[in-house]
Every structure is written in C-alpha cells, then in structure tokens.
Image 1 (cartoon, rainbow, N blue to C red):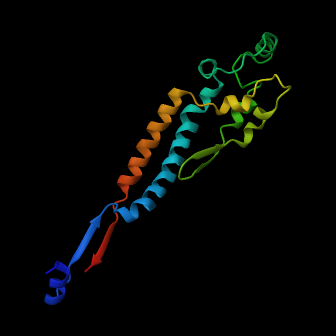
Image 2 (image 1 turned 30 degrees about the horizontal axis):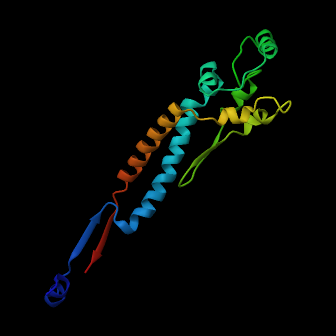
Image 3 (image 1 turned 135 degrees about the vertical axis):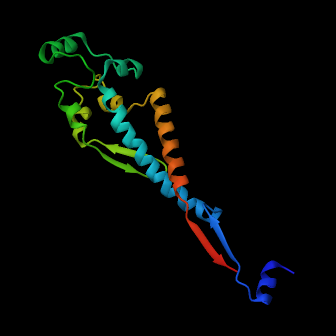
Length: 166
C-alpha cells in the first residue's frame, strides 16, 4: 500500500514542504539570478575597470595601436598628457554615465557619451571604439569572479518554500 493511498484511507493530510530550488523551478530561478548577476558584473566593470581604459598600462597590456610621435607630442604640449583614448578629456568624463542592462546570458554597458571613439580620420587610424571594448585576460578573470559571486548570492537568496498537500 502506498503512502498516498494510506493517507486517503485514514483521512490524513500530508503536507510536503520543499525548500529551495526544485528541478522544475531551477530554470526560472537561474534565469532571474543570471540577469541580476550580469547586471552586477557590468556594474563592477563600470565602477572598477572603466577608468583603466585611459591608462598607458592598459594600452600596453591590451596592445592598443601605436600613435604617431607627432600626435603624442601635440597632445603633450596642448593638454599635458599622453594617455590613450583621451585627447582633451571630454570622452573620459562622458563615459562616467552609463546605461547597464543584464540579460540571461550577457550584460551590456552603453556609453552614450563615448561617440567620439567611433570617429576615425582615415583607414589607417586606430579603431578607438574597439580598443575601449577590449577585455584583457586579467579583466576576464575579475569579471568572471564577480559574476560567480553575484550568481551564487542570487541563487542562495532564493529560499522559497513550495507546499503541496497529498
């Protein structure tokens, strides 16, 4: 005799409480957690890694295209620096504002103020937008760790209890 049939015969209500993710709910829980995790990952990029794009060290690691000596000399005389992806500093200030979106399998950071990175003087000019988007191996590790921490936090936070009566 099964437990369910015995309960019906004895007029007992058996309540089973499942705590946490059950296989049927895991997909929904993972999707919601992944969206939030990607949002937090892109937010971490914006807060900690965005400004590094404008440093000479990042330019060396990410292998930015070489600028001409005349251009670097002009920039040094005019603005007092030789930082990459930055001429007057307007673009660097403009990328402080961002629109972050998190999807289930990726996240995006839209920098509306970075339009000047798309301008190219000629076919041999460096592609500054591509250089700005380049993620180094070290940055990938940092962002992957941030994603893992965020996703684990979201999945552990889902402590819903489903109740069913037999």
